[in-house]
Image (tube, rainbow, N blue to C red; front, side, top):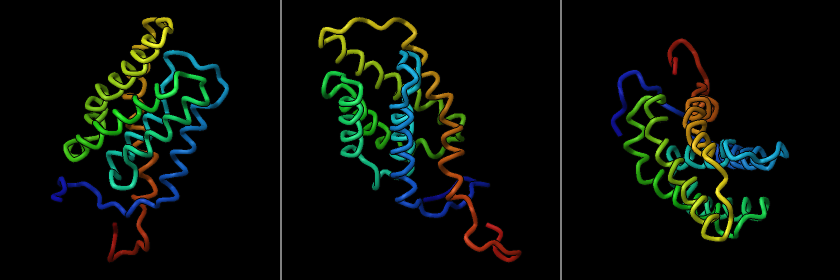
Length: 172
């Protein structure tokens, strides 16, 4: 793959780091702060990040399993999060090559429709199952998730940016 000028060559992602970041994001979603409608879905954010940066390691099946775990935890209609995370993962994998050509702030604008579609799918399943409309503050969640995209990118790419053995002849 041809790299943009000035883009840093990254080390391979450690699978243990990938899985621990996914589990940490799931724990953040499960943290008992009281689930509000506008609160960003940290697991969806990290799933999209790893689907974009490591599509062969984290795929649709992983998103489905995490979605089922979130459905069980939140006592939601079984399949509500699973369907949303699966669709989110599919579309993130679909655009991952195109997305990596943009700068990180531009990537945030490109993932905003993905997060909005994911929340719309969750809302559709909830309403179809007889739930009530949670209110218009639901629109804030995808906006906050896209605003968090640069922060998540910075944090999750930091271990890959370090040089294995930096010296004056190899200043990666």
